[in-house]
Amino acid sequence: MTNLLRSPVLWAALLLAAVAATLPWWLSGYVLGVLTVAYYFGVFSMAWDLLFGFAGEVNFGPTFLIGLGAYTAAILDAKWGPPIPVCIIAGGLVALIGGLLLALPALRLRGPYFGLVTLVAVLLLQNCIVIFAGVTGGEIGMTVPDVLSVRAEDNYWYALGFLIVCAIILFGLSRSAIGLILQASGQDAIGAQALGFNVTKHKLAAFCISAVFSGVAGAMLIFYQGTASVSTVVDLGVGVQIIIAAVLGGRRTILGAVLGSVFLIVAGEFLRPLGQINTFVVAAVALAVILFFPDGLLGNLLRVTARERE
Amino acid sequence: MVWLQILIDGFAISSLYALGAIGFTLIFGVSGVLNLAHGGVMLVAALMGWMLAGEARIGTYLGTLLGVLSGLACAYVTYLMVVRPIQRSAAIPREEKEIFVLTGTLLWGIMIQQGMAYLFTDNPVTMRPLIAGVISIAGVRTPLNEIMIAVICWVVIGMLWLFVNRTRAGKALLAASINPRGLTLLGFELSRVYLLAWTIYGVLAGVAGVLLASFLGVSSNNTGQLTASAFSIVVLGGLGSVSGSLMAAYVVGYLETITAYLIAPTLRPLPALLLLVLVVYVRPQGLLGRR
Image (cartoon, rainbow over all chains, first blue to last red; front, side, top):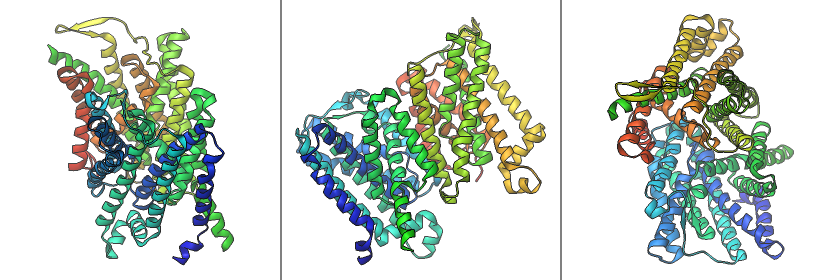
């Protein structure tokens, strides 16, 4: 615990969170809206980083879990209209089931094979949504009757609060014994097993945790946006953005994923005047970071401070 | 009648799939790289071919040739600017090279897609057929172009087979996929072998791209779909196995055609995806994969 308290990352994160909490007093509603979306993406990326950075599972389909959570909540709300928290919890539960479905092959397959299964899972979900267009609205998407709030500030608080809670849980988890065992089983499963750790149990837990956070965040995102559509929560492009954000921020740092997401979304917004070419520029910047600073933003910072202390 | 139609259409589509997937599996077999910019390389060849042949009015054949060459150029850029720097980077730990190559090529693929959409818009385009005319096979009217495409695919695949099995450079390629260290000990420059593999890959993807433009048409929106279908065919056949990929291409091609004709065109990709999930669960190494 003392180790954790001395970690500069923790203090920097607290400082950033405090600054973020003051933003609604001096930023416009539009900027807050952009940041709200970025915070939800931060949760997506952190959940992905737990699976990839720690459990070592290459998951190309984070949007499978997000989409399940989002569409469950949206359909539930549109059909029966229970209170919003019920919809969100249901979204998290269905995503959890999806996570278990994904974990099943992950325990048998390795590397590219598992990556492909996750990719196919997204394509299947996308096809199902289009086929059952009567319920899901198909390619156009569906309108969600209820929203979290109509005020930009409130939505910002919800997103920030949710982000901070997720960050504390996931970061704490990654620094705990469970995180270490996950890391060990990701890098050398046989070695970890020989040391007496139950690799299956830990990986299963990682999938469940990642799935629940993705699903709940997906459900909250659609209650913020008021619509659920394939292009915002299921499309492969969204998944790619999440992966890029996590790698950009620094793998195995959890908190770096938040930095990466905020950077990606805000940069995309700044480059909007460029029109169609803005995704090109964002991808190019991300590629340059991967080529020249493979540890990502936070990973590089950490390495520099570690070297100074030596 | 409809079965004959399925047989003919399915054959042409499957041959094209086979050609598209074979380069992908070759690169993986020889250098262990999964190139997620594959759809992008095909797209560049297809759009350049369409633009040069149609808009620039330099003739279909010259346009096709230049389209293939631009696919080759794109493959070189992919290797020299994205894949090789990652492979040689000292900052990336060895066990993480794979995920970095995946992420890097994925990003590069997005850059190609967006760049092409910017230059040519994302409207679907179809190239003029290589040869005009329609022929009737047992009562099924078939465009000559479709037959021509299947023939070209098989000629190219045949040439690849001859090259790999009958020439010295091709045998070096084969050896690199079996034991790269042994090949180095015999005095071969491994980097040259890799460059050769990427050259062949570029030509294969280029031809597949141009033929796709002339057969089904392309749009920059389909880039991801192209990569995904090549990836799934290759996994279905067994990563790194060329004959497995050929077989899988026909399984997927016919499954899709049968679904489109007999059930509904909207369900077209579904059975192939389900089959893929099933195969990966039951037999992860694919139909003919080695493990």
